[in-house]
Amino acid sequence: MKSLLILSITLIFSHLSFAQESERARELFEEVENRRNKITYETATMTMNIIDPKGRTRERVLESYTYDAENVEKSLLIFQEPASVRGTAFLTVSEGSRDVQKLYLPALSRIQTITAAQQGDSFMGSDFTYEDLGAQDPDEYDYELISEQGNEAVIKAVKRSESQYAYIHFYIDTEKYVLSKAEYFNDKDVNIKRLEAQNYTNAYEDVWRPGKMVMYDLREDRRTELTWKDRSFNEPVPDWRFTERALRRSN
Image (cartoon, rainbow, N blue to C red; front, side, top):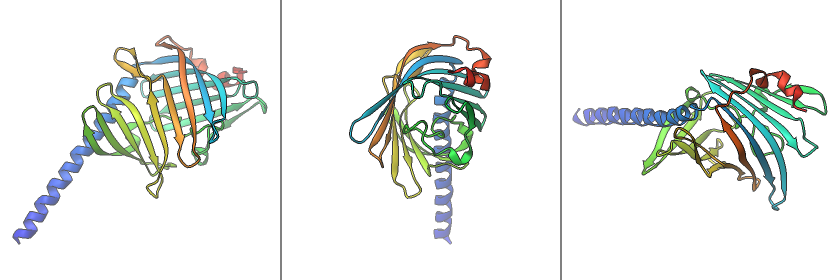
């Protein structure tokens, strides 16, 4: 009887410890989101370099517009260069856990809605997928705190809805409350992709933004580099920018 009592107590404390660690993990993830959400508007010029296993590079230049307020996130990407993709535009509108993504292809003069089945598809030949470019709602994940040492915490996040990933490890800088790295795993526990964020600067009231992000496809030995320049923060962007009208006007 005594051994059963000890076992019961041990299980109770183990459960409490796991619950506390899960809550801590969620708090860290939410703090990253809360700080990021202090910036309502952002515009920038972006360069996308897609680098194949032989080191050959395809460069693309984009304009970026974002809006983030009151549980609504909107983003518009417009390709400017090269001529073969000029006018292609990608709109994401997220309200809570609901994402609507639309891609405008000027050659076809058609707007394509990205379906759930297409979330794992490559975005414009890059190593980012449509799911990678969607919003990350904290309520959409279950969390586990893997470790927390110094200024770094590692969180395991499992998406509650359908995902191309079995789980993700988020590496969080707990001094700046930013994402420094993310590792993406499949259902065989194989790390298939890695995202690294670099060159952070204090953009606005202790909100840090990366100057560069690199997504590595570890299966194909490829990577895609995104760099930002000419950024502006909290300068209002007109509402029409985040509509289908803006997609069609992109070219």
